[in-house]
Image 1: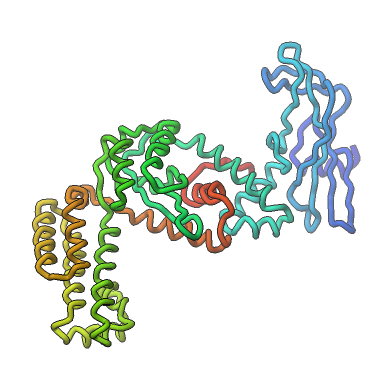
Image 2: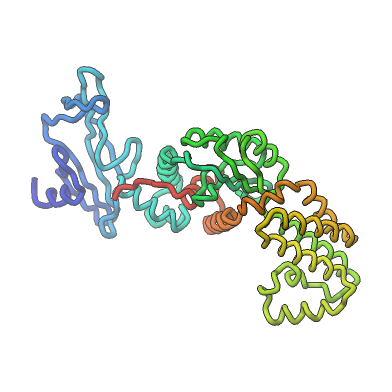
Length: 405
């Protein structure tokens, strides 16, 4: 072996009988081709039993490797098939690449590190490979890491949907509220998603019966799914979703009144932000509008602030008392959008009150949703649900990818 070949053999970490026996630079194409071989008479372990066996024949294969400076590097090898007396003829595994891949392990590790930080299409341009090939790499490592994921300790789960593409196209997310990791994601937002989650949970050492706390919105489909497939779970209706309903009601009151009260036009955020979040200019304008004591919007706004304050209470009994009083005040207000919310609270009373005991919310899911939508925007969308879900697992799943270094 000449010195150059020996140097590349060492650089690639090859051990006998593997060795580099030819190196070719193509300056015009900025390409480096490394040819890996083995001496005549070498033996390799049978992939089934591990017994050293003679070579039966070989197959020519090529893998893309990490760039050598500005040169795209490729490994070429005659991969042997061995003849095992017990198990017959089998293709051996090579130490630098996984079976079925056209990339070396180190190239794949680089790709996986890059796709965490930037869109797959951007990475594909940087490494000069098609994005379809890179998605297959991502799919392999995410699936492999999920196979090893342990869900045996999961007992508190948050559920929410996130938009996959424009229109009514959703992915439902199931998140471990304790470990703050994405457990499962699946297309749709119906009750069937809970059946799929329960099945996936069991496949990873968990149990649907072990789920004792669930946080979710008021979706009838989610309520049905939880009742059917998480039999021991007590449901907490997420207070952020409840607050969203109240905010929408306040804005509906404002819109209706703005027709006769010009001061209310373009004032939406004054009523939906907390007082402490308003700028000095916004605060001054709100105080000026509130001087009109007869505004229905001001009345709805005060009910909004009271509703929010109720959820600072830690005691269920006290919370129930305050919430009952709020519901009665809303009914007496004669503001139809607010009254509708009051009846919604009454119709979901147990799940609303459960918060005062469980103290769980979908806050972590709101953050997760923001991260996913940001990644989707950078990628300008994903062509398939599978791609979107794989990226969700990669970003939010806290997966142990076990990448080569």
